[in-house]
Image 1 (cartoon, rainbow, N blue to C red):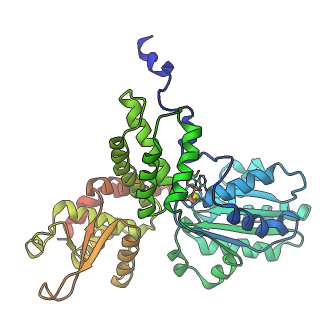
Image 2: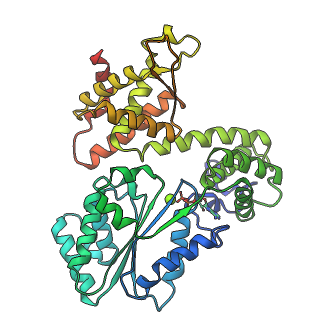
Image 3: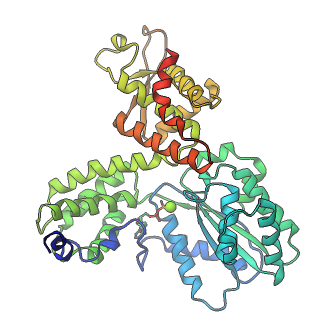
Length: 417
Ligand SMILES: Nc1ncnc2c1ncn2[C@@H]1O[C@H](COP(=O)(O)OP(=O)(O)O)[C@@H](O)[C@H]1O
Ligand SMILES: [Mg+2]
């Protein structure tokens, strides 16, 4: 029985571990009444069986977008007067037009769960299914910026609407990234943005209340003091206002106390949890980067491990890399993976995107150091960044049915020097 004793032992800390998982949906979402009623209002025509306007939901990570939209969906599901059909699609899993269309079809017609239908089959079947009885389909596309061929997807759904004789499709797009808009076709933008709802970041009082709500469901009584919740809330608010990060810190702190068999979460637990939760968020972010940004951050991690070629020039700041050497490395890495490298104009845009995401830090060198040049510093462990990108690139090329040889790109990338 010895090895199984652990399982049966009751937790000293957690009352309901589930309540701290990122997928848990609380019964009551705090501070979001306004956003929830805007979502309901925007969807009302569709829910009554008319084709409503499309909706775009935007806000930084952890501002409650997914939770609010799911909350509305759950409420609607149990209302018998709702005529619309609803599909929720998470683009981390369904990241192409084909996958999104298959997911919509298999949600409503289980026979389409099988693979192997062509895109034209799916499209025609979708149209005839909607026309059968003039349905309205609401498609919620979460983290829509990850869809590789987004213009094609939007085009297909818009086209479907004009082909459909009775009924129609309403699109609800959700995104954490505002800058992805720049890469979209203007027609896609005007389709997506018929209606827009913005989710602001939470302030520290709001985060503290969200944490308190979760502590009451997830933890046993008396495990954590209010001052610790305020500390977590203040740190997270200063950084990003991301409720997911707050909750991750809380749950990690709980695990640390649990591992040591304590009945209370200490300040040290919180501090340790802050560090590891922030790292996890950064590594998680990498999986949502577009391919070439992944390649750039990969080049940066390789160079950081190797050390800058110009180390002597940047004395006292040896972790900084020169923008030019990073670009060369990026080109070498892309070539070794048989990907066409983008021009340096694109590269500069990637660098500023990566900085916006907090993965790197940059500054302009003063005069004297080979003129003006941009210096770049990786904000996280290069080993971990490298491993994360490799895992990601691997997974994607497998999904596309290519061989996974790219994993060695790091080594080959060096050959260019
Ligand atoms: N207003 C809120 N009240 C309670 N919990 C919230 C609230 N907003 C966000 N959360 C929690 O924070 C986490 C992140 O929210 P999520 O909806 O996934 O954010 P987003 O989709 O904007 O990234 C989830 O675990 C969610 O339960
Ligand atoms: Mg989300």
